[in-house]
Length: 296
Length: 174
Image (cartoon, rainbow over all chains, first blue to last red; front, side, top):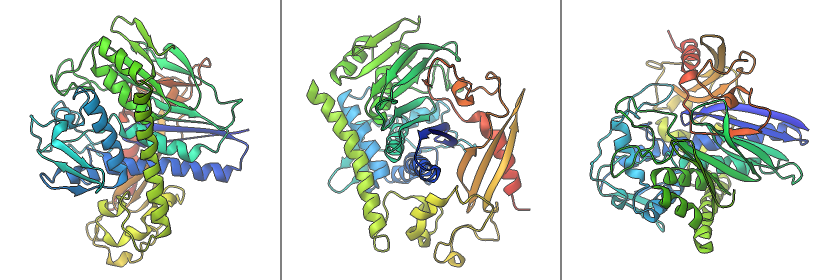
């Protein structure tokens, strides 16, 4: 079996694709290229760092329904459903707060984003019309799809790679491991140790599933003490109930969004969110105690 | 309970379905329809490039070498960055970024003054130590033999910015 690996940068992270297959190299090459192009399309639609992204063009239009394409509409709709489900603990309108905390720099170019946002804006000010596929913002706000867009791109990439015997799409630590050959497609995945970066704190076996991890040990705010890249939209602070939340799900968008939501929730609420969704999770507390959910 | 699980699964699966339905529709009726998922033509500020943007993207990085951009139907009429104030030559450029103990090589593709692709072309070769670039082991292919891959909080691309800047300096006009 031939093993192929290619690595590109998207969404300010490293997207690493492995494919192992007996199929022709050209076929795998073309599929890998299509898988990468899914990341570009989602990034072009959903980036809040790029003034010309479909998202930011839509965010500049207040009070009118704006027709949006599926690369933006679908992940935003998922984020809105979760915002509703968690009563706003998870809220995609947190983008303005993120900008103020210094998460405003476009990677590679270094351009700084500075967009108007109303501090009182919340997910209730975002209206989506499923029939006409439009988005309407009632207040100026910056929508952040950081908890869904990458997962969505992974899911689209996976669809391109699904004919191959064994493959993995890892976007900066959020990954889907799968394959068409049942004999080979169990993967042993390590969950990064929050303090010792080259070690795993736990390993899990997954098969045709995603595992996504939200953690407080990367992307620390330079603008505010004790703030990292996951911010509670209501308190405008980073919660510290967990240092790492990993969620396993059949789709990366689901694992991505729920790992972020779990991180934002208190201990009991996080466990109950994952239990209700029948998802498996590995959550790590600040004292490095591990809490497992869903029969891990 | 089961119902709630199903809700989220259905949302994910429907989201992927919508994308594939729209791409299929677009590729079969390209000349007649706007392509809602495709932003390239809008970002480039070139309404004329819409029709060919899908194939344009697919071939973006594999076409590789520093050649002219694929035809967009009427490139001479492009209202995008004109030849007068264009900053970069189109093409793919290799850049190297050095760190304390090694270097990372990237291949950066530039099209109409936009970075359209950044591929890490050569890091495994240069790196045996993992603590160098601020990246976890799995990125450097030196990962523990005990696991197939590693999940963790999302790390950034800062470690690659020098290499990308190096490539862009070669693409720069003048």
